Length: 313
Image (cartoon, rainbow, N blue to C red; front, side, top):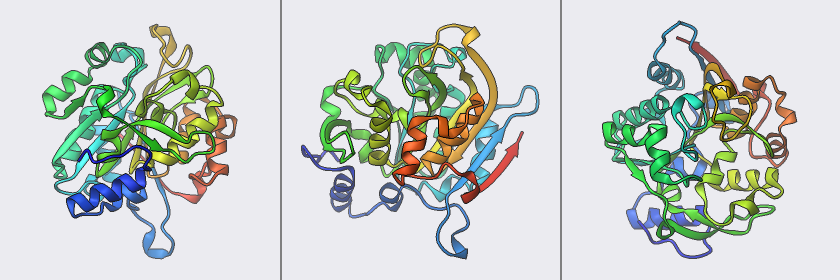
């Protein structure tokens, strides 16, 4: 499963891996199955918003309810699949500081993947702070221990130069466990960001590559879109349980955090980020990467074109 060569694209790597394994993964190539709406004609994307309205609700139960509304994890994960989860674990921060994906969201998704028959579930992120401290303080390490998921530490041996084929990015080192997976699920936390206004799902892919991060932050909106069109996850689940409303993306103070008690699940990465903008009382069009991604055909920022549902707990 490591037969990746310098300069190949994600699609080419998936085809190569499929030939090795004898199986072409539909969800990995196309970016996910359609949960509903396909029977009436052209497939439509979907978006499910889950809101915890009951005091003391269980985050893991809300995750399960959101996936149930989308038709269940078995629509996306098949028995024997290798699933890569891409949370945001970049900062050595405790969960209550809202700089990293909520550990209960991460744990619930792992359990759903395992219940659907996944052979392996991998937690993958190229952190900014020291990975061991990030995994410990964020709670991801403890989640891996409890669930048996693989916690992948970033290292040079797992990076391969691949053709991004973006407007700005050409060849760039990519964290290979993300492109080797049968299904790829993006698990960002929603936060403010000084350069990109927000960091949600599409920007979370900066943690899926290596190279010079400062270079990725130049012309940041196009960089975000280039990476988003390359990775094309099966699903995006936005963690809006508590969000970082100021001093993002790293925060560091409880005063920077606001409870939103919201999850956003979609097979359209642009739609997920567009809906997440509402958690900050922002219009989606004011977020450069969302606007640019919609213009370049990566997805839609108009929720009216999606099959949209809302659940509460």
